[in-house]
Image 1 (tube, rainbow, N blue to C red):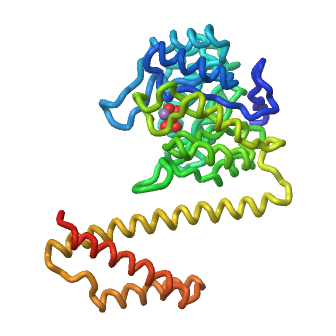
Image 2 (image 1 turned 30 degrees about the vertical axis):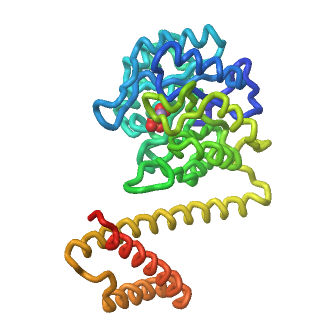
Length: 364
Ligand code: PEP
Ligand code: MN
């Protein structure tokens, strides 16, 4: 893929990170225009809005459909912003291209499907629009080959303005992030295709407003080329992804505090190895905290069972077995037995406290 082109746009300073912002979903013409005016005032040049929404469950808000294309044109006319929307089928591509949308993006559920990717690539080529910009979100599962394969299908169809978007990966169970970032996968993509621009989507990674600023800064520190952030004129009333959308004013404040790196690409300065090791520590610590939270949830479940059956909270034999077996595993991994004992006892104490709380409570 050595003919990939940089994502430059007339009127947008290409030395700065590329920023795309707008609502998760187009809802009404007024919501689109209000949000777009706020974003234009905040210095944003590219407006995003989903009009066909891939919902996990049927019955969710599935987007306004084709009428949203008219609203995107209205936004372009009112603000001179470039426009971007998500496409998942041949029909979406044809409609979006004829409506003058500037950037197409492929969602995480679609980039995981080679049939859909081929159909989209063919539709762009057959419309003679290989000049269009296409951004490809990572597939929902952490499979870098599937992500690259999706990008290659577009490239093979003749599209050269392609970008990747890291939006995080699905996991089972409770997590700090809505979708685990797995930054390493983006780093590997950068190393394999240095000319491929990579954006970060902190909204879908974090799933929460307060995580957008730190995730955006982390993306800048790692040399990402830009950000795609969900912004809504009235986030709490959004029909999709309400918890992760910010007002245009909040977005302006987040961007103002952002410290971009001077050079694009993963930097090679001497502080980078340290920064990279610290990111690994941050990620492992998040996993530790998540694992502890899961363990406590199971403990509480056990507490409810013991309460129901009148079983005492602590049984000495089980307790000794638990501590001993974990220390054995830890020692095999080269860890210190005394340290392991301290940590395990602290965890066990907390489990007991949680179970006592359940037993003392009036509900079952
Ligand atoms: C979106 O951008 O609103 C969206 C549906 O994203 P993803 O495909 O990353 O879930
Ligand atoms: Mn969304």
